Image (cartoon, rainbow, N blue to C red; front, side, top):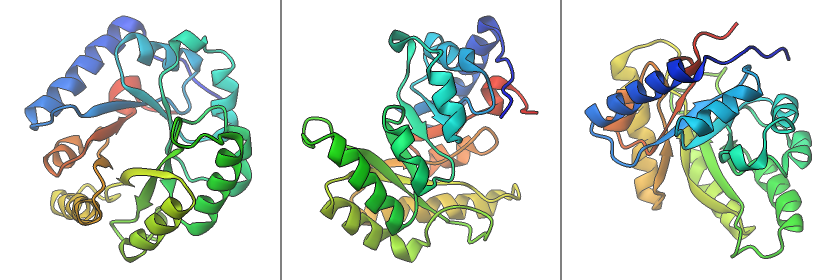
Length: 229
């Protein structure tokens, strides 16, 4: 996949400040800013580090691997994999991903446990962190498990030694405020009922609603790096 250049540091610093202000104005405290660097070149990752983002989000395995090879280790942020995840890509991503956000089926839970825990025998010192993706809008083209399946996935993941830190969801494709709020509120309720503290909800267009509904991490791409080509 062809990558494009990220904005200069001055522009990115201003955009990070703007996003942080939006989060605060929505009532957010300690909300992580995940810079979605997919389709941008490796300088997007180093720039996100320099401008104080909390993590980066990537969607594509081969692109992520290629870019991290160009990023000095002392300029790397935690990497969250947020795209649709294929089981056969997990092995190649073991040294790249810190949080697997888009886990939405038993086969992925099993494969992550098999690959990651085999490499990482001391689970309590360095647990493998995942988030369960929920399809909160019932759109067939979106990833995520059904809300009714979350508890079974959680039980399986924990039984295999994975650290389920929370839930992730994507708001509705159509920018309807009521539908967006309902989707985020549903996931927030599931997380609360299951005792999960982290909620990855909200992107550039809907972060205020997400924060109001309890999001602890927003995934911002175009609001930081501009429109993708």
